[in-house]
Image (cartoon, rainbow, N blue to C red; front, side):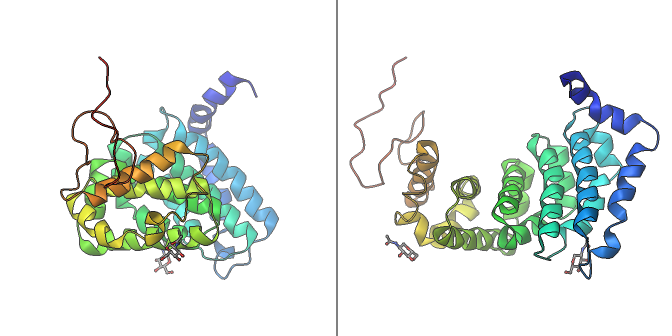
Length: 272
Ligand SMILES: *[C@@H]1O[C@H](CO)[C@@H](O)[C@H](O)[C@H]1NC(C)=O
Ligand SMILES: *[C@@H]1O[C@H](CO)[C@@H](O)[C@H](O)[C@H]1NC(C)=O
């Protein structure tokens, strides 16, 4: 497809008469087959094609707001709420998460507020606990994008219950990752942890609730080829090791490498 056509696809879909209604009809038509799970592969495929088109609408700056205002994401929740492990269901959930991921990708507080209001976090947490590696990765990405927003972080850290629900899911993922490594998923998990330390209460909670496997070198091999991710993990450990939750090296620039307590390079080596 030509690039301009692709760029214009979302407004074309959104403003052409009856198109969105037809796409939603494709999605609604599979609801009866969701529970009990009787969906055929071909029906799942059709719905996924409709979802892929809706994803372009969610991703486009011109159509994103009307897409939210029309509450289109609500049509996805019955799909995201399914638990069948059949391949067609996994595929459907992943494609639906892709739509939410396209929304979450933009740094927009309004989108974050919408996702919070729609209880997307509990949905994502469930998928992070039970989904395929790919679904877990997209769900963790969405939760990370939500917590990157100040409103999202405050929401998660507002009560100990909410924080520990998130922390427990992340910890369980770390345990599972030790058995079945996935570098990209581990990176998202580490990024969630480090963002949580920006909240003082969450930081205090993580001092005692960070899984041992993140501290003891279990993932050295997994992160061997990813110095950036390794650095972020080290930064997380340093931050949790220092009393005030501050980076151990005050001053500008990222904290120097080396575990807390190990000899660090002497002084900052910035040149103006
Ligand atoms: C999701 O499933 C739970 C039970 O498993 C149910 O209580 C809830 O209403 C469902 N939500 C949606 C949006 O379907
Ligand atoms: C690291 O900690 C995990 C969880 O406690 C444990 O299963 C694993 O054996 C430890 N690995 C090393 C290298 O100490």
